Image (tube, rainbow, N blue to C red; front, side, top):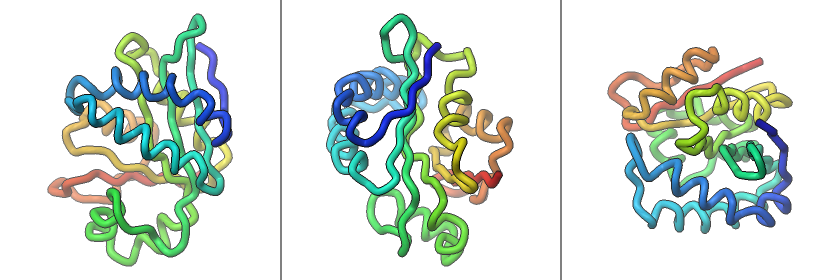
Length: 171
């Protein structure tokens, strides 16, 4: 499996690969996204890839994409909209000291054909390799993802009743 880092410009040039992979990665359990999820991701990607410090990792095997991750440093002040409002509601002012400036892992996707081989951990490792602090969030029903982050030593910042699960990692 080959992993490569992509800049924002390189990511946009290969957006179709990421969008297709997003679609197959999130159309089954526990996400069950419909075609609108991939369309929303495509719109977000055109904006996100232009953020300062944006980076992506694309994994491929035999010329076919198998997984990817996207990330960027969280700006100051802590943003609003998207899932940011829920994170602020759960963590309060702690977002300004713990998450601002940290690398924000926005997407981590592995196609069904490539699961169970440690690829998500490898993508996440390369994505966060140069960052002192990282954070991400996932859904409480994403049990496999939660187990992965815990196994990799990420610390859960939210309680068991939260509607999103926020994890952080410091090197």
